[in-house]
Length: 372
Ligand code: PMP
Image 1 (cartoon, protein in one colour):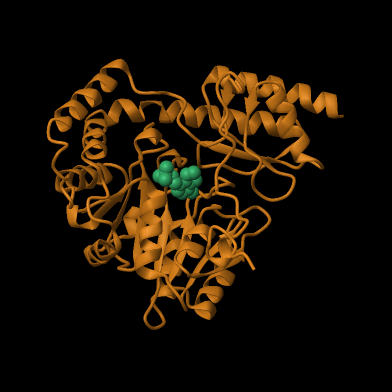
Image 2 (cartoon, rainbow, N blue to C red):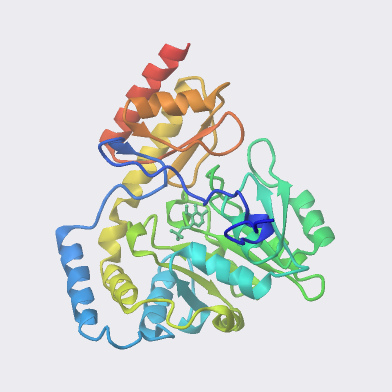
C-alpha cells in the first residue's frame, strides 16, 4: 500500500487554510470584507516609516532586539492613553498580529487535556489556535441579540474549568461589546478552580467602541488572570505591518517568552511599528469618521427592513437572508466584496469610506430588488 502523502497529522487532512477570498481591485473595487481601515497613512507618515525601515536596514545582518524593549515601552504608553492606566512595559507583549499573540497564549496556557472556551458566534480563528495547540475547543452560546447571559456564562466556566476563555469585545462577527461586569465576573469564575484559567479579552476593535463602553484594560489592576489583546491592524490602519500586542500581569508576559520563537519580531516590523506609533494621532484620526459611518450604516440597513446587530466595531452584521450566498454574490457582481460569515442567513460588511458605503448601499438596494 502506498502511504498517503504528505504524511499530515490526521486531524488536518482535507482542511482548507483559513482566509477570506482575496480579490484584486479590478475584480472587486469596493473591498469591505476583512475589517481593514480604508484610510491609509499620509505621505508624511509613510515617509517616516520608510525612513525608519531604511535606518533598520543597515544593520539587518544582526538579529533584532529579542525583547523589543523600546516597542514595549511605546505600546505601554499608548495603552495608558487608550483606556488603560499604570500599564508598564513589562506588562506588554507583542507579536506578528494579535493572531500570533493569541496562538502564543494557547501554546503557553492551553495544550493537551486543557480546554479553551468561547461563546458562539465568535471569532472563527479561535478553534484553529485550539486545534494547532492540541487544546480542547468548547463553546457556549450567546443570546438572540448576541449579548452574553452572564449567569449561564459563569456556570459554564465553573463547570468546564477552561484554561483559556476567549472573549472578543467588540465581538467578531457580531460587533457586540462586553460590559466590564461580564469580564470581571468571568475572571473571578476562572480564578475559582485549580490551577485556574486566563481570560483573554480580544479588543482587536477596541478603539471603535461607542462612548460609555469602557475597555477591559481598566480591570487589569484587579484581575491577575486577565489578558487584553489589541492590534495595530484595525483602528491603527496598519494591517500590512502585522503587529498585535497584549497587556497583562508581567508573569503572563514572562510565560509567553518560553514558547515564542527567538527574534519573532523582525527589526523591520519593530521599526515600522515604532514609526507608526509616533504618528498615532494621525493614523487613528479617522476612527470617529468610521464610527459615524458605521452608525449611519446600521440605521440605513434597518430602514431597509433588515435585522442588524448593534455594533461597537468597524463592521456591521445584518440579515437575515434565505440565501445569503446569492446576496453576497449579487454584491460581488456589482464590484462590492463583503463577508459571508456569522450565523446562517447573516452577512458582515466592513465600514469603508463614505463613497464605498454609498456603493454598498446602491448595490444592496439593486440586489434586494432583483432577488425580490
Ligand atoms: N481578533 C479578532 C476578533 C479579529 O477579527 C482579528 C482580525 N480579523 C484578529 C483578532 C487578528 O488580527 P491581527 O492578527 O491582524 O492583529
